[in-house]
Amino acid sequence: MSGGKETGRQKMIGMMYLVLTALLALNVSNAVLQKFAIIDNTLVNMIEENKTTNETKLNGILASTSQDANVLAAKEKAKQVRVLTESTVAYLDELKKKMRTEPDGTLKEGEDLVTDTHRAEELMMDEAKPEEALKFEKMVTSFVTDLNKIMGLKVPFAPLTKKAQDYEDFKNNTNQLDKSFLEFTFEGTPTMAAIATVSQLQTEIMEYEMVALDSLYAVAEGVQIKFTSVVPMVRPEANTLVAGQEYTADMFIAAASEEDPEMFFNGNPVPVAKDPATGVKMGKIKFKTSAGTYDKNGIAEASYKIKINVKGKPYEDVIKYRVARPVAKFESESASTLYLDCGNEMSVSVQGLAEASGISLSSPADQGKVITQGPGKFVLIPTRPQMDVRVLVNGSQIEVKPFKAKAVPMPSPKLMVGNSVYDVKKGIPPGTNVVKFVPEISDETFTRQNQKDAGYRIISMTMQITGKTPITLNSGTIELNKYGLRAGDSFSIYNVQVVRSTWDPGDDDRKPVNAKLEGVYVMGK
Image 1 (cartoon, helix red, strand yellow):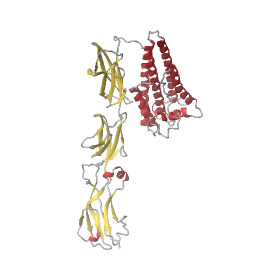
Image 2 (spheres, one colour; image 1 turned 90 degrees about the vertical axis):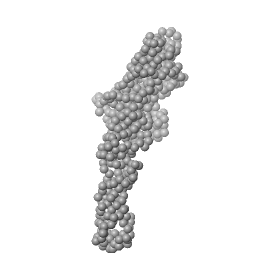
Image 3 (cartoon, rainbow, N blue to C red; image 1 turned 30 degrees about the horizontal axis):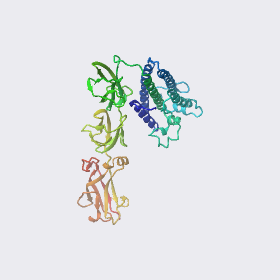
Image 4 (cartoon, rainbow, N blue to C red; image 1 turned 30 degrees about the vertical axis):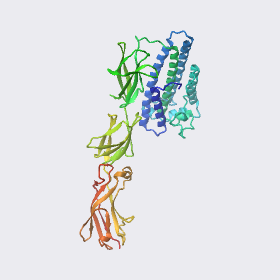
């Protein structure tokens, strides 16, 4: 885009586009495809908002009564920009409609559209019928070319036909660098994601128009606003946020003034300072967002009141914004099932939050405990079959995720003779001095996921040599040469006490395991 500071809205749209593009490289589930529908709905709303804003800017330019040649030229350019933008956006609307329609004319809606993975790619990547794809690329290219001709700016608008190398996040991705604009945009793209991508492109077109009209408005000076019709304005960094995020916005009088305005947010005074970039006196608004009732798309409507007093005259308004339902994502090999009294490590993130430092977890004390290892890193130690984990963002609860917890696997007995397992047919070979009775765990998933909790060992057991007094041992090691065993003698093992190591640093690595281990063994001949 031509020179100028990128707005909060533009930053948000750019972030959303990068998230969409990154998701397209994944084998997405239906749940993720549904999020594309939600994001597309948000983008469509932004397009309408930008349209209203740009029409207001256009009307301000056309309302100028100045007969200066530069002003008259600016008015003519503004009309041309509006016609160019309307025709391009209208074409893209028709393209999205074609993506929603099967070749036989059937319109895809609802779940059928969300789960469709081929229609958009067939329409835009068919080498046998490239007309639609070529028209799309030509329209997007022509928009920027024609806009630059109309405006004649020293720093022209950048092309919108971006490829992988045009994005910082993808410029080193060797799988993407060879792709053309069309391939990078539509290859392997589910239909709902393609529609959302076109909507995102429409928002960029509207932003280009906004910058162009702002430039022309500066020439035409628009309509001079009298203080009898001044309205308070708020410039938010984003209109859609996750519950728990901070809402940040600039509140200001639309026209610069030397007066010292008093500003209020929900009845409370707001500090006012002159913005060094514009010279306009602004009040800074900052608060943590929350939501009441979310709609089916996970969006809640919210608002706040502002008032600006200038020379004792109040100007009031209600500012509306939207809050998106935050969804916590748990990443762990054991994300669905935990083990009782074991440390189950989790990485937790929340969609829409760039940092994980504001995320915290908790659970009822009688169900287990949560240990925080770092931003977004936690260990869950359940003590009951179900552990309800509360997810909080900056202290505000966003959801409760229930986890099922199962008992640790029980070990089975195994007698080790050197490096070999006891052979019941051969018995213990003559001359063997030491054997080891050990608890064996056959559940490889448990031992892989919970290495710190899988250290099973014997701390006590009874050895009964046939015809002799039982002997208590404090480990699983049996020194046979101490007991004068001869070929054909046998002994049994019972009353085995097994413990295991634990992840919990507050434990002593002697967690009792209720395992019944025993066996009878014979000295070989």
